[in-house]
Each structure stands twice: as C-alpha cells, then as structure tokens.
Length: 86
Image (cartoon, rainbow, N blue to C red; front, side):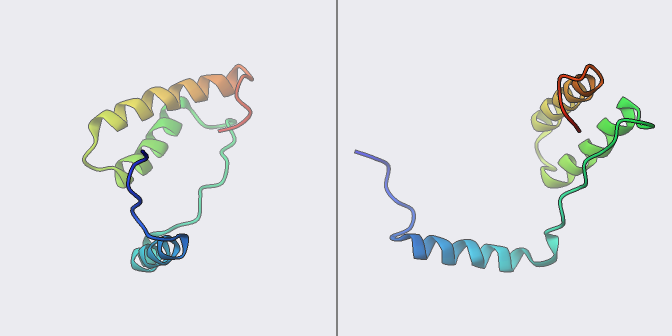
C-alpha cells in the first residue's frame, strides 16, 4: 500500500502550487547567468554562490558546508575540463 495522497487530484495539486507561486510574489528571481571562469577566483565564486545558498536556507549550516564542498569541486572540475561550465 502506498503513501496517502496529499491532494485528491492533480487539479487540486496545481491550484495549490499556483497559490504558492502567487504568495511568493516578488521573491522569485531569474536564475543567474552561467559564469565564465576567466577572471574569477575560486574564493570569489564560492563566496558569491554561498551567499545565494545562505539566503535561501538561512537556518541550515550543514547545507552551507555541503554547498561549499560542492562549489569547490565544481570550480576545480571546470579548470580540469571535467565539468562543462559553472
């Protein structure tokens, strides 16, 4: 037996999602443009991206630590051409 459904139908689920989007209002922003590694240090990149994560998840220090490890791995991967872009 599966877990109980939160919404009776997909239509109800979509109404709920639209209401949440409406309530969010101006908090939604456009996703940041991809960064070019040229002229950007690892520290600058990590600081910039961690600021975004800290704003989204202010009460989660474990997430910030994971994010920092991931951001450093990703930056190094771009430099080694293992990751396509930042």
